[in-house]
Structure formats: structure tokens, C-alpha cells
Length: 603
Image (cartoon, rainbow, N blue to C red):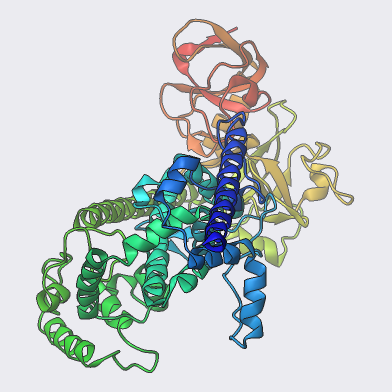
């Protein structure tokens, strides 16, 4: 009797010591978590050493632990010894010849360095896809199993501190920053956590004794009492009845072959491999997900279902519908359960699908309108370019100017048949006609003496040098004066070229060109603000008032003057007719501009 009493007393003392140590460890972890919560941003800091130790903060007192525990026995004393020496137990298991496994997945190769986060793509319905989604899916499982204990009754009751740690850990490794991405990732983690918990419960129910069940305890559950309470709940008669009910429902479901890829990534792969992505319906996705790699259905039931689907699809091929309530899948398998849609991935509902279909329809309409508008703009641009070219080009010259002393070359004769006559004004601003010739091109990419023409310039063939010693606008090593350019092409400022319009005689051209330029253009003038403020914005010289005169490739028109700008008085004043390169008065210094005739003061 004395020996039995001593043995019981020793057992109680041993059990009390273990319980006190467990409570002290739990309080120490709670203190560590509170210290981590004092960061400047109010969140728990990310630490590789801290994350595995994060546990729930509901720490029972010493008295509660002793009261809730089972009656002390020799078997319980053996369980305590096994808990104190887990490594010795593992080595004992290995020494008994049990098969070694690779252990849980850690995904330690995921980049954690700044700037090397893994990019994750998403489908138009907000589901992860692409290569980055595979790494994300592999990482979420170990992460949620490490930080979230299976003793949590409901995923929706997850502690905010653990949520912060999970999200920060994911953001450190993946390029995910949006709130909607966070919602999708946490929903996926919830499903992974429930599946992991279900597998663990199956192992608990299959265990033969308490020792085997204790070996199944995850490392993130340090409180043995909490684990025993969880085991008792999952091995109770009431839970087994509920579990068997849902197992029966599960056995009635048609299995798929997607594994962890899921319907969303399967649909995205099918669209990429299809010549017409819009033809990939949820019926085709469902059939593909229930078919093996060799093309055979997973079982006889699936084979019969696919045959019925193909028959209905063949009958209703002419009447395409986007409603999931009327497609072949709903007709064969019945209406979808509330909150779920077959073949559409996790979390998709009829309400969400309707929203996405409406959005896609609106986006497609906007894209079509944008395409039509772009076509109209391109048509108008081509029309304007054609009108300008016809105005400048005109008819081909049929006769040569007999006053030319130079013998025209073959190139000259060919170009002369298709180009319009023009006169070149002195580019320095004297308004003197220094030469006569033919317009060839205004293309900025056109080469003149092996140099691109560039903007605001014309390629001109020089026929008659009126002022032989006038300097060229762009001299070369072989040509410096107009006389040296006779019978050759030169570049000339576009505003210093006077084009001869269709049907206009040379005499009229001289009158509107030489006479106007040499006589009237020397008259100085002042330009009033075109907006009507009455302020003098610039000083210059009157050039022409001919409505057919071109100003930056646009006819001058009625009630307007072509004016050479010399001095800007208000540099930021807006031009009357701005262009892509000329917008303010200061931009037009040294060039000609069009100005309202009632806003020009002659001096």
C-alpha cells in the first residue's frame, strides 16, 4: 500500500511539473507576440523565427489545465514522456524499419529578397493563372498549415494578428498588393486549411490508440489539453455520424482530373490553345476536367454524362446562349447549387458571372467603338493628306523653261513631269526670290544630298537662279550658293517656298509672289491679340493676303494675312492657327503665320 501511494504521488508531481512548464511556455509566446505588435505601423513584424511560433493567445490557467485533464494513469505518464522527447521517438520509429518520408513541403526556394518577388497573373474573372500561380499555390499550403492550428473551429474566426503575418509573408514573396487579390488568396488559403484539417481528422479516426493520435499532433499546437479536446471532439459518436453523412454526399460527386490546377487555370490553358477563345464554354471545361490524358472518361458515369452533353450541344448548336441556367450542363446535371457553378472555379456564383458577362459585353462594345473611331480618323488623315498633295502637286509640267542655260538631266526631266513649279524666297528673310524650280517632296524621310529632309522643309529642284550668289539653306562641301545648285535638288524651308497654283499664269504668280513679297512684304506691321484683348503680341512684316497662299501647307483663306514674325511682345500669346510644332508667338519667331486681317496694324 505504501509503495502504491508513493507511485501515485510521483505521477502527480511529474504531471504537475509538465503542466506548469506548458503554461510558462504559452505565456512566453504571448509576451513575444505582444512585443512584436509594437511596430510603428501597428502590425506584427515579419520574422522567419517568429512566424513558426505564432499561436493562439487563449492561455488557460494552471487550475483549468489540471481540472480539464483526464484522470492520471500510467498510460498518461508514458504519453508525457513521449511528448518530452519527440526526437528520440522519431529515431525509434526509424530504427523499427518504418518507411521514411520527405516530410512536409516548406517551399524555401521562393524568393524573399527585395525586387525579386514572383509575379502572378490573373484571369478576367480574378482567378490566379500562369506560372506564378503554381508557385503561389504551392506556397500557401505550407504557410497556412504552419501558422493556423487545426483546433480553430471556423476559418472566419481567424485572429487578425495571424492574418497580418500571413499576408505580409505572401507579399514578401509575391507581387500582390491589391485588396481584391488579398481576398482571393485568403479564400484559397481557407479551402487549403479545411482540406488539410479534413485529412488530419481522417488519420485521427484511423489511429488505434492514444499514442498514435499524439504523434499526429501538429507542431503549432503546444497545449496538450487543447489537442486532446480536439481529438475527443473528432472521435465522438455525434461527429462520426455527421462525417459519414458528408462522406456519402462526397461519394455521389463526379471526380475530376485537374488535381491542384483547378478549373480556372484549366480554362485559361484551353483558351490559349484554342484558335477561338470565345468558344471555350463551361461545358467544354467540365468535359475536359473529367477526361484523362488518354482521352478516356474517369468512369462509366462520366462517359454517359459526356455523351448526353454532346447530344444536347449538337442539337442546340445553332442557338448559342450565354446563360448557365440554360446550357447543356444544367440540363443534364440539374441546376447548380446556390453559391456554386460547375466548371467555373472556386467562389464563382451566378451573380458574379452575370456581372463579369455584363462587364465583358461593355468592354467589347467600347473596343469596337474605339476601332471604328480609329478607322474614321485614319480615313480623314488620308483624305487631308490627299487634298494637300493635290493642291501642292497639281498637273504635270509639259514644257521646259527655255530660259534655263543648263542642260536638264534625265532625273530632272522625270521629276519635272510630275512636280509643280515653285519659287524660293531668301531664307534669311529679305523676301527676295532667289531661284525658281519645281517642288519634289515634303516627306521628312526623303534624302537630300544623303541627309534626311526633316520636318518643315521641302525638297526642291532648282531651275533658274535669280540671285546666283544667294546662300543655300543647307550648304554642302560642293554647294554653297544658288548658282551651284542649278540642275540639282536642295532642301528649303517650307514657309519660304511659293507654290504656283493650278491655272495660275507665271505673270500672276510673279504679281502675287515677287511683287507682293518684294514690295508689300517690306511693310512693317504689328499683330494684335487674336483673342480680342487688344494687346500687341508681336511685330513683323506683312507677306501676303492671297487666299490661295499656303501657310504651313494650309491655304491662307479669306480675311487673313500671311505675316513674318520678327519680334515677340507677348511670347506666351496663342497663335491664331496653331500647328503641332507652333503653338505660341515665341515658337513662330523667324517664320510666317496666318493672322486675322482685322488684327494687323500696318506701320
